[in-house]
Image 1: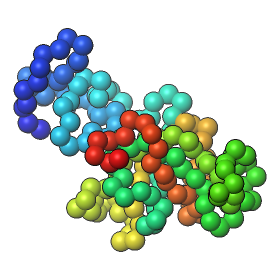
Image 2: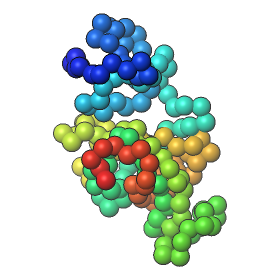
Image 3: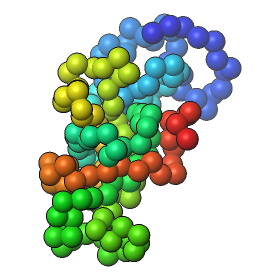
Length: 166
């Protein structure tokens, strides 16, 4: 962590340099990307999903996620391949282009992706990428089930995506 100069703005709750030690008592509410100016709303007493949300871990192979996937990206998750037609509860409004695919989640926030150097604790294997998504709680079970079968693909969608990943 380093000190930076910012324009004073009473609408923004910047963490002042003299408050840095007090952050040790708090936890980040979600992963904070490098180079971000810290604000008070990023920290709290508890670390976990917001009310009505759940976090789901996925192990994805190349081709199941977009290039340069980053924390903060907004993605949609689709059931693909395998027995995707047998889910029965899949979205009936998916387009004809991928009739064997169905949308599981229309908007999920990426909360974890291993860093470029290869976070040894998060890499499942050399051919998989461990990704954590924050999703609506009622979609978590379907996403976890499809992920465990290796039948999930992520697509970056419009939202508050991380800068530089368009």
